[in-house]
Image (cartoon, rainbow over all chains, first blue to last red; front, side, top):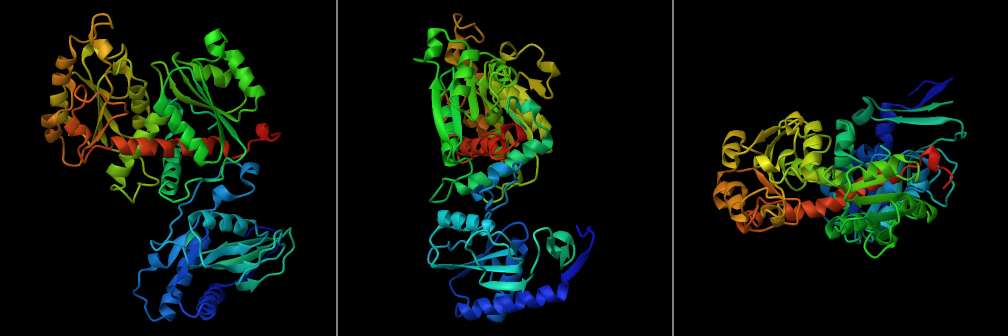
Length: 185
Length: 327
C-alpha cells in the first residue's frame, strides 16, 4: 500500500486523532450543538471515520453513553456512481440510516479523501432518495484538490496539495490495523 | 459470472456474494423511494415462452427498481406462435439493443443454447427451463433460509455466511420440479443437508446420484431429520389421474401421505420455517393452517424474489466488461 518510489507519511496517528477532535468541535460549533445531527460515513473508510467523529461529538456534548447508532450511519453510494459501467461490478456495502431518518436533519457526510468530488455528487443523489435533510455538510480527513465538480468540504482534516500522479492512502485501525495517511508517488 | 443458467454453476463464494447483494437490495425495498439508478439506460428483455405471471412480474419489478427499461416478450400472440425459431427471436432482440435477456422456456437447455450459441452477446438469466433449473428461485429460497436460520429473522441477514449444517426437507413432485433440482444444487454448495421426500413415482431416475438424501416417508423424515426448513413443492392435480401420467392414485391419498397438515406442522421443530415456491394448492400439498401459520415464509419468499433478481441483474449488468465497452 505504501510501495512506490517515494512515500511520505503526511498524517500520523496523533495527527488524525487531533484532526478528528477539531472537526467534531467545528461541527458542534457550526450547528450550535448536536441536536438534529446525523453523520453518514461513506464506505469503506468514511464509515469508521464517522463513528469516531460521532464518539467525539457525544463526548463533547457530555453524553458518552448515548447510543451511537442514533447519530451515525453509513451510506453506500455504489449504485449512484457515474462510473459504474466503466469498472467491473463493485460489491455493495450496507446503508444504515439512524432510525430517526434524514428528514429535517443536518446530515454530515464523512469520507476519507476528497478528490474529484464525484463520490460526493453520488452521495447527494443517494441522500435525496432517502429523505429531505434540512442541510447537508461534508467532512473529509484529507482534501487533495483536483475537483471536477463544484463541490467543497465544510470540515477538512488536512489540505494536501498533490499532483494527479500521486497517491493518497488512508489507513485506519479498524480496517488496516493502524492509523496513517501516506502520500506516495 | 457472465450468465446465470444453473444454480449448479455457482461457487460458494459467488452464491454468498449474490445473497449478500440481495440483502442490500432488500434493505432498499423498505424505503419510500425504492428505485435505484444502477441500470439506467439499459434494456432487459423478459423472453417468456411459457406462461409464468409470478416470475415475470418479479423480474419486471426487479429490473424497473434498478431503473432498467423492460420489454416483455411472451410467446403467445407473438412471432413465435407463427413459427419463429429461438435463433431468429434472439437475433431480433439483439438487433433491438437488448442488454440482458431473461428467458423462461419449456425446453430444458434453451437458456444455455441462447447463452452459448453466439446469437446474442448479452448476459442470459434462466428464469426456468423445462424440468431442468430455476436458479433465481433457489437463490431466493436460500436467502430466506439464511435470514431465518443464520441471521435470526428480520434485521440480521447472516451476511457473509453460508448455510453450513442447516437441514432442509423438500417434499413433493421432485420429478417435474426444476425448483427441487436447483435447490439441491445450491443448498449443497452452501453446505446444507437436503432430504428429498416424494412417492417413488415422482422421483427422477438417477436421484441417488444427487448430493442429497431421499425418503418416501414424510412422517419418518420429520422425526429423523428434525428439519430447520421444510419446503413443499407444488403438485399438479392433473398428474394424479391416469390421463395425466398416473403418478399417484388420488389427490386425497397424496395429501394424506405427503401434505403438510396441522399434525405434521406440530411435529416440526419449533424454529422450522415452512416454505413453498408458489402457487400453492391449499388442501393438497399444504393445508391452509400451515400456509397461514407464523412460521410460513411464503409471502416473504415473494418479496425476497424481487430482491434476489435485483441482485442478479445488478451483478450481471452494472459493471462494464471489455466486450461491452462499445455500448
